[in-house]
Amino acid sequence: MSAFSKEEVARVANLARISLTESEITRFAEELGVISDAVAKISEIATSDIPATSHPIPLTNVWREDVIGEGLDRDEVLAGAPEHEDGKFSVPQILGEE
Image (cartoon, rainbow, N blue to C red):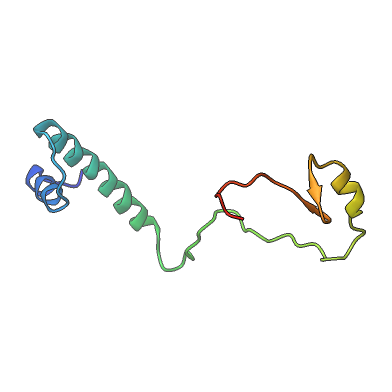
C-alpha cells in the first residue's frame, strides 16, 4: 500500500482549513493509500499501445430530420386553458409588476 503519512494528511487538512480528529486523520491516510494503489495499478495497465477512452462502449448521437409538421390550433389550445386573453395564456401575477 502506498504510504500516506498522518502528518501529510494533517498538513493538507490544515491548508484546506479542515479540522480533523486524530481518528479521521488515520482513516483518511489509509483510504488515500488505497486510492493511490488503485491509480498505480491502472497506470501499470495503461500503456501507449492502448488508446485512452472516456467510455468503454462507443457512443453515437441519434439525430432525426428537423421537419416542420402540422402545429396545434391556437383556439383549441386556449380552449383548454383556465384563462386566456388576446390569444395568449393569462397567468397570475407573481412579482407585483404590471
